[in-house]
Image 1 (cartoon, rainbow, N blue to C red):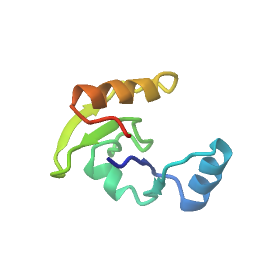
Image 2 (image 1 turned 180 degrees about the horizontal axis):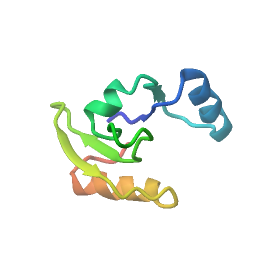
Image 3 (image 1 turned 60 degrees about the vertical axis):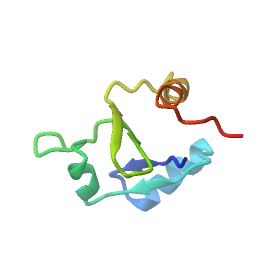
Image 4 (image 1 turned 120 degrees about the vertical axis):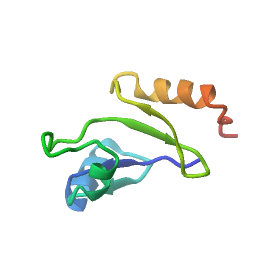
Length: 91
């Protein structure tokens, strides 16, 4: 399993943000919003990306999209959804 975050901010802004939080996972940058647009998290009407979580299977297919992400419970919410999807815990 791999996990990462993506943002429409610049690489420099994302680097500073990741360092400020001590993140242990990649924070990808999409300042041109091409990927964000393809995933529907930004639109012509909404320039700021929705904070959604995508669960993508090994086959590249989206298994689930969580559109009601809570920053306060995101970690435990992700763990619960992974268990529900049958993803084994890291050994």
